[in-house]
Length: 195
Image (cartoon, rainbow, N blue to C red; front, side, top):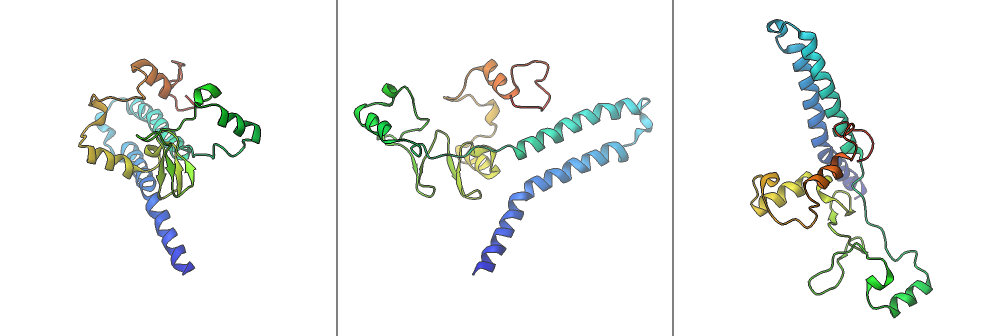
């Protein structure tokens, strides 16, 4: 039985790595095609044309590598390190606002907190259980491509970026760009460090 489980895990590892491998092959092919197979006889300054492609290629591959290696974040047990005094204080106070700390937990319609049956943990806002990772992931759209594609297909969205719909996490045009690219205008398009 354990050998079948190992075979299944090996197959799932290959399936999960296939999008990354496909894009690596695509990047390699584009580099080879652009630098070696294109007919440069029609260009007078072929060195300049190649010099334009090299930085773009390096930035693209570095950005993709950074996205693949950045952890999406996982949930932790919120009440793990509480002592008895904090628990007594929680019982005396009726709301989280009186404690001065709001838990990043989305509640259900009836007011109960969301809870993952598989991880046995409370779920943060925008958290979903990932079948491949076997744990709750804070930003599910960064880990599995299927989740993003399936949700857009089921919602009937052809182009999410152009659609105008209510988004409670929208900070505004300028702040959204700063959150993704960073505040320093000189390093906005360089994929270095954290935004």
